Image 1 (cartoon, rainbow, N blue to C red):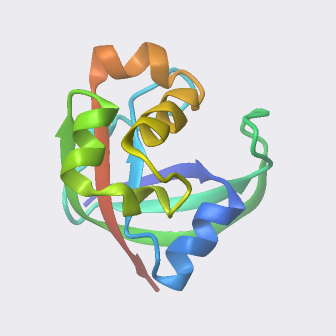
Image 2: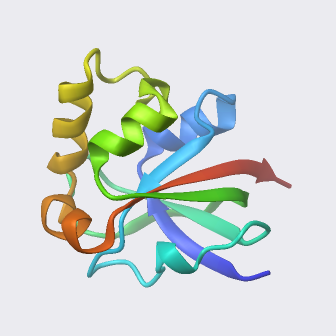
Length: 129
């Protein structure tokens, strides 16, 4: 088992805590040390809350906000494939249509550039104490 620190905004963290959000969506990028293609079931992610959105940097405002266990990691070639397979609920009801969901994911910092290179990951998680 490995442990990884990972930045998150307060609203998605609240959705994880309430049980509504069970899948975190990420792609490998230049600003996080974690490589999502190396995550394994049983690994732990230690979420740290950052200011935003929008993306304003990685200044942590709440360290060690929540630890979660990785249940599964599913890799997709693009945002459309992920949303079709995982369902729109992985976006916490932020979007109505598949196209809006793809546009939302592509609006995240570096996702437009990085998804064609690395794909996109659906990381199934559960909080741990």
